[in-house]
Length: 211
Image 1 (tube, rainbow, N blue to C red):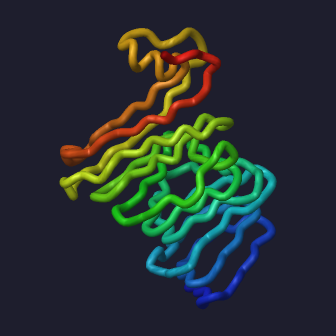
Image 2 (image 1 turned 30 degrees about the vertical axis):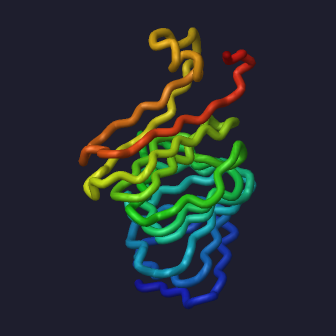
């Protein structure tokens, strides 16, 4: 079954939605319950999908793509499989939390809009290709984004994960432990060279003094 939503059309689903066919979204699809994608979501559609509940939501997109994804409402969104963003990830309110090791994948040319203490990704984020990379990660209460400047290798693919210590504190390089004794960021390069890129880490007040 093929379902197609036209340009400017708004479809609100107040409960859960299980897709077993093919959806082409050229409008505004708003879902307040669980999203289970057992079929095909055609990301060539120009529309956006908005998970907007104030209650917890489950997202299982079955390792497929969204053109534009909006995260709103106040309920945490738990995603159970990789989600690829082709154009835009808008973090308005509430968090995207990874389960099963799933990650958010941002293709070359895609952008991140928003990001705050109230709305970020809890889990790994992958960027691909050239351009400025923003990893909109946090720990559930604090937004701790990492930015990497544009490079020259179009084949660059890298995944960043924020790791929070549950006990103890970091030891090692003084400059890094002064940045944070409670967390570290892990960057895994799966393809490319990261040539000419610069990395910018966030600084969060941990009740420490810096000289």
